[in-house]
Image (cartoon, rainbow, N blue to C red):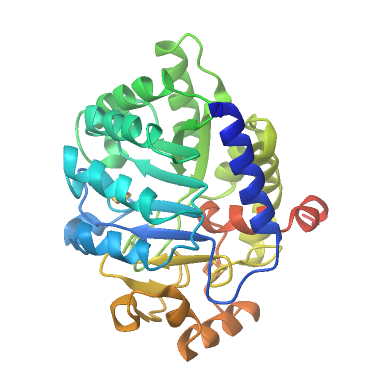
Amino acid sequence: MSGTLTAWLARARLGAALFAPATRGQPLKITAIVTERCHLRCAFCRLWEQPVDGASSPEWRAFFAANPFLRWVNLSGGELFAKESGAALRELLLGIVESLPRLELLDFPTAGQRPDEVVAAVDALLSSRLPQLAVTVSLDGGPTLHDELRGVAGAFERAFDCFAQLRRKRSARLVVVAGCTLTDRAEEQAESLAAELARRLPDFDRRELHFNLAHHSSHYYRNAGFAGLPGQSALDVLGRWPKPSGPLGFLERHYARLAPRALRDGHPPIGCEALRRTVFVGPDLDVHPCTIWEQPLGNARDFGLSLERLLTAVPARVARATIAKRACPGCFSPCEALPALAARPFATAFART
Ligand code: SF4
Ligand code: SF4
């Protein structure tokens, strides 16, 4: 089967699965923090101060094998490429793909500080049965601003090298974007980054930039003291930036359209899929509803690594009810909001701003 057909069929299957009624205890999407180790020292994140190494790679493989219903895996950190190097990390990634027969999409962000290892991992994944791979290379501004926000000299150059190498490999099965986490310096971030990428890459298209909003999270970023959260300038950037075409463009257009209401209300306008279609698993296999709400629901080790057993236990049931009542902290983080928008396309299209 051609790569294009493989990718389109996977998108269709994932879209249908998101649209179908959720199966109790069997989320479609997982955000898994495989390590908190990182090469960078970002201003809006404090994981790097005391990173948790995370469960061993064999234990992560066993965890995924115990939850074969997962169809969308977001591997995050920390930095994936700070957990293992070279062959060991490729073995972990391929092991995850092998463990999940229904996997349609694997995605991960990378700070891009080990460009050759990232490229080798992408090559290995593309030679596996994985239908779709999406890689976000974090770039938060032009070189000076990026290095300032990310706290390490030379970080931009390495991340750019990674982005430039990966985008030459783009295909129907591989999506590569530059991911910019907007802070209170959103305008400067977006414009300095777009100008630098356009100067270096003759075929650069502004739609290759994707934006995230910096949030507070005590377990995902440990950044309660961060004072530079994004404001109106970030909403302006989100609203005016050109969007890609296709399903991702639909989601990004409506995410940008609904972001002002979400920030005003403090909650996602069309509801949240945490603990229904999505779940967050921390580095030591502690399970929480999402990236934003630190609400320990149990450790997967105490449930035989089974998410289904853990998510049908009392703490998860109570947390689901809390989310339904909008009594969680609330957020509009794209990691959490985009699956919710995808699961309710009609409500998304017609939701008031
Ligand atoms: S935000 Fe990401 S890249 Fe930056 S220090 Fe935290 S884990 Fe590392
Ligand atoms: S709305 Fe609440 S439960 Fe949903 S992702 Fe945000 S903080 Fe988590």
